[in-house]
Image (tube, rainbow, N blue to C red):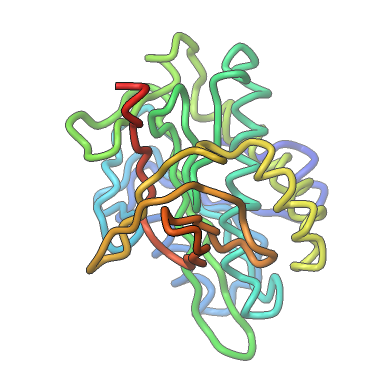
Length: 256
């Protein structure tokens, strides 16, 4: 895999593996040894890929596994916003390399890219440090295949009718990510990122269920608040602000 020339000229570097345990783990290990980034770590296969909340990310050949290491990208409290930045960059890259899928794509809060309602890509943000934060922006995109039997349906680009090599997708991603990072501007531009994300949001204004670990809450996906938390309007009219959770669509009686 190669970076786009725009990324190379901007000083971005790249470490490519055939197989590794986890590109996120590799990136953070490099940061502990003094790597300052920006640096992409990619692999053709992962043996211990992971998603949010410690879930396994099934890392099959032919898909894209990539992590962008950023050191001191923003004030620590703004680091979770990188999930929205990365989702938009993945959305941009897929549209560039698979234009026909544009109308079929949407973004699911807080960190997934959907195609026709099924999960096409996931993002995992991990950070270390206090005064200076190292952030691993992990991205997995199902290009050639996807896992079966997952709780939330999955898909891949080939199943959607478009053949895109992970190398091609990564080259585009390495460039468009720079554009989205510049728009975000270390958190100062999150209002614009938030607006762009909401314009592509799945389920906005629709009934959803949010699982919060020990409970689930139903309501209507109203908006994102100014820092990216989900605003859920419950049946009693109250609006609940949710910082983290798993979102599932709800089918109404009229739709069933």
